[in-house]
Amino acid sequence: KNEVEQSPQNLTAQEGEFITINCSYSVGISALHWLQQHPGGGIVSLFMLSSGKKKHGRLIATINIQEKHSSLHITASHPRDSAVYICAVPSGNTGNQFYFGTGTSLTVIP
Amino acid sequence: DVKVTQSSRYLVKRTGEKVFLECVQDMDHENMFWYRQDPGLGLRLIYFSYDVKMKEKGDIPEGYSVSREKKERFSLILESASTNQTSMYLCASSSPGWPGELFFGEGSRLTVL
Image 1 (cartoon, chains in turn red, cyan):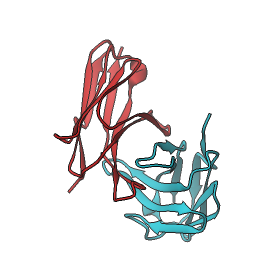
Image 2 (cartoon, chains in turn blue, purple):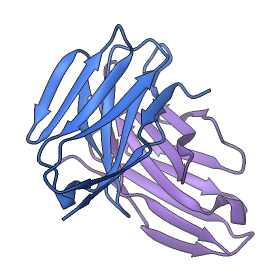
Image 3 (cartoon, chains in turn yellow, purple):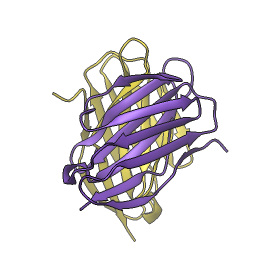
């Protein structure tokens, strides 16, 4: 059983399209992370959010704690957005560990 | 700019060799993690450390050990590398508080022949 489920697993889009990646989780949390990993690269944190919505440039993340669901949106997608996007939630009482989704691989075609 | 630095981006080792993967963070974080990343399996926790000389096993500790002699440095050791340990290894640290913000290194891609 996966505590964190992402969909879709793979996504191909044309440049300029609006993209949505979904994350559902089964554990009780107070915050969720969205991470980005470019091919062959390390992982960078995009957002940490506990309620509502956050925006950074063309990226928007939303979370509904009651429904245990979060979405990552990319507006006006660009080939440089091609990456794997991973959601993560803290586990345990101390939040020292994390459950990770298996990632969504996004390819944006020029 | 805060940083988690892993010593080697790419390594090729032979079966049975001892392998050291080193990770250094400059943020004075107490929590540090070693993950393994494989296609279709996502990130799996090998070990984490919440203080100097303190460590706890993660989900897949078999075949690995760790060392945390100084707060900024967390090392992953493969005592006798095997081909099934060919993988991408990622080190991370997290900031204080609950939940902490995650910071990752660039990753070390290990191939065991």
